[in-house]
Image (cartoon, rainbow over all chains, first blue to last red; front, side):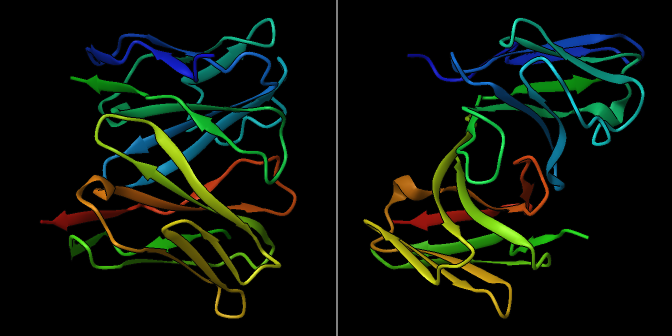
Length: 115
Length: 112
């Protein structure tokens, strides 16, 4: 009966390196969302999945960001050639389905620091 | 476009009521949410209100919605030190697939 889990909880990397962030949604939840929380910027929507499909990728900040979801469960957010401005907390949420009014349950986030 | 505004800080004394305010710009908002974030933790959904409602009460929490002014408030009665956290207002707009537009959060500090 675990909630949404994310790994790693903290990640420190050097500028230019690639990173992978993982999200395990609540079992049975078909919708999965990625958000970014930057200092002083609030939460910014990045991308959502309905099943394994991501219909709208326009929230991703640049083409260095990509995400995939396999088996309708685990999702990975990949940032290539990281920059210092990528430093933020990356939050994942899941809900039983997409749509307004569906409660989104958030994970604890991955804190990314790019040096 | 969509925008959600909140004041950044609020300080109250234990036992007092806290009122956290939020304004939004998109008149097509259908659901409005309040989330709580404690240090080092993810976001916890506190409550939400559908845009055709004026008020919703849940124990110590009261949500008021003024749709004409696009103003949402969260009142916490008998505020406790455990209520110290960042509170985020968020909207889900018509036509979206449920992704939320968040404010920057209000940091509530409760002094004993």
